Length: 404
Image (cartoon, rainbow, N blue to C red; front, top):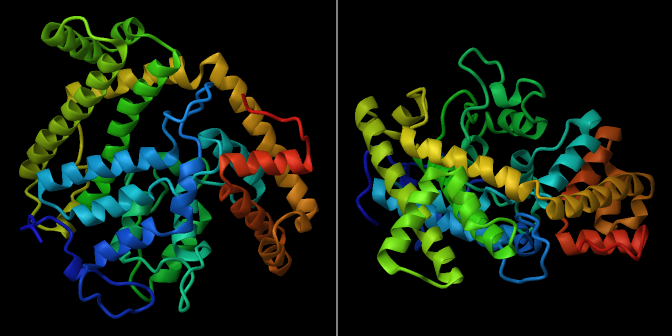
C-alpha cells in the first residue's frame, strides 16, 4: 500500500458496514467495495445503456460502461497524484452511474416526470437504492453492504446536499432532497452513522466527480466528431482551449489523418485537465491547511477543482456540446422515441403488473401503497438496458418501433 497523505481516507479506519463482516486477509475494505461493484448486476447492465445518443449504427461509441471505465482510470491517476486512496476513488467512479435509466438522461427525465407525485426519480438516489437494497446477491443482506465512506462519497460526490443551516442546497431547493437518500441517512444513523449531508465528501469522492467531467469533455468530443455531428472548426470557434490544442497538434505533426487528430485531441484534453486539477487541488489543500479527512469534510469548500482558466475551458466545451451534440436534430429524434418508450411502459406496468417478470410482480403486489407500487415500477424500468426497454415496448406496445 503506498504511503498516503494525512488528508486521505484510510481503509483501516473505515466507519464500517451496516452488517458487520470479518475483514478480508488479502484486500482492504475499499478494495472489497470496488470488487463488489464490479461484480454487481447493475454494473454489467451499463454495457447496454446509452451514454449519448449517436445516430449511427457503430460499436465504437461510448456506452455507460466504457464511460465509467474511463472515469475510473482518470480517478486513479488523480488519486495517485494527490496520494489519496485510489481504491476508494475507483470504487466511487465505478458506482457513480449505476442508477441511470435506459436511454441516458432523457430516460431519467421521463421517469422523473412520471414519478413526480411519488417522490420523483434521481439517478444518484437510484444508485444508492441499488447498492443498499435492490442488488440481491448475498445470503445475509440486501444490497452490497458497502462501507460508510463509499456510500457517503456516492451521495455527496457532487457536493453537500444541505446548507449549514439544514436547508436543501440549490440543486435540491425546488424539489427537495430525494427521499431514498433521506431514508437511508435516517436508517444508518443507529449503525454506521449519518451521512452528514451538510458537509463535503472525501477527496476521493471529489476526485470521482471531477474525473467524470474530464471524461465527458474528452469522449463526447471524440464521439461527436466521429459521428459527424460537428467538425474541428466548430470546436475551434467555440472553445479557445481546444483551438490551442489543435494548433499544437498541427505544429508538432503537420497534416495528420482525421482519426489520429481526434485521438491526439482527446488525450491532450485529458492530460491538460488532469494536470491542472492536480495543481489547483494542491494549491487549495495548502491554502486551507487540511491535515485529515475530517478537515476535508468540514473545510466548507470543494478542494478538487480546476483553475479559473480551465474551469472556463470546461464551461465552453460543455456549452458547445450541449448545443452541437446533445441537442442535434438527429439526436433529438432518438430522444423523442426514447421518451415515448418510457412514458408508455410506466403506466402499462402500473395497470398490468403481471406484464413484468414474476419477481417484480411479487414486489408490486407486496407494496403497501400507491407510492410504493410506483417505486417498484420505476425500479424495474430504471434497471432496463436500452435494448431490453426497446424489446419490451415492441412486445407490449408497438412491434414496429425502432430508435434509428
